[in-house]
Length: 347
Image (cartoon, rainbow, N blue to C red; front, side, top):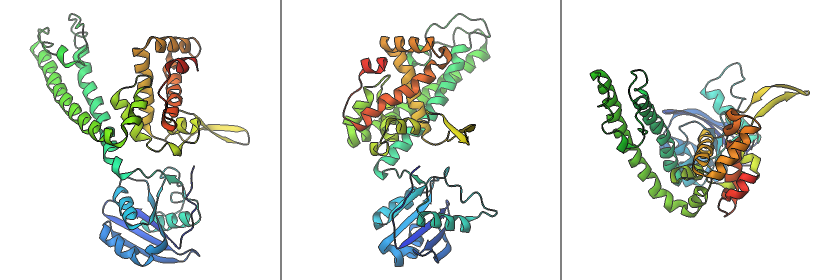
C-alpha cells in the first residue's frame, strides 16, 4: 500500500459527487481554513482554492467522478492525490458519516501522510482504456446470443450443426434445419442481434487500435508476443498497466492482476482471506484469456498444461497457468524483451 507523504502549505480534502462537492482545507498545523459545500464545477472549485494555490495538494476518493478534477489540478500546477476507496477505512468507521465529515477525514489523512494512494491514470490514454473496458461487456452479450444458436438442436433432437456459430459465415442458413416456425424465429432473432453486435464490436476495435499505435506501438507489439497474444489482448495489457515503474517486483504485478491469495493472520492464526478486490479485474481476465488461447494455439502450451494437469488436477490447471502468464508479461513491461516460449514452458 502506498501513501502520499509530501509536505505542503495547505491540504485540501474533497468529497466529490456528480453534482456537488464538499471541500475542506487545512493548514499545516491542522486548523480548518475552508469548509463548505459547492457545486461540482471547475469554476466554483477554482474560485475557492485561488488564495491557497501556491503550495496546495488536492485529495479525493477514487470514484467515477474524479477525471475532470485531476485534469483541472494538472493544468493549475497543483498536486492531486487519488485516495484508494477500498483502503480508506477512517471515513467508514465513525459513528456518523456525511459529506462534511468525509471531506475533513480526507484532508486529515493526506496531511498526516496516511492517505492510501490509487493510480492517477494519464488523461491522454484514459478514453481509450475506457473504450477497451466497454468492449468486454459487448463481447459477453454477443456470446450470450451465440450460445443458444449453437445448442438449439439438443432439446429438439435436431442434426448436429457441425461448425461454430461464432463465425458470421457459419450462421447463414442456420434456422432452416428447424421444422418448428417459432424455433426458427428464435434462431433468426439471435442471429440478427449477433450480426448487429459484430458490427458494433468491429467499430469499437477500429476506434481503439488507431490511437493505440500512436501512444506506443513498440510496447504493444512486445505484449502481443506472449502466450495467446492478440492485438486487442495486448492493448488491454498495455492500457491497464501503462506505468511499469509502479511494479518494482514480479509479485507486485501479479498481485495487481488479482492472481494471488492474501491471508488475514493474527498471532499465528489465519482468519480467512483479504484484499481480493485490490487490483484490476481487467488484467485478471486478460491473463486468464491468454492462458486459454496459449493452450489452444501452440503445441508447447498444450504440453505445459498437460504437465500442470498431472499435479494440481485438470480443474486447477488453468487457474495455476494464469499467474504464470502474469509473470511472463512482467518482463515485457519493464524491459524491451519479447516473449520467449521455451523459457515460459520450462519455468
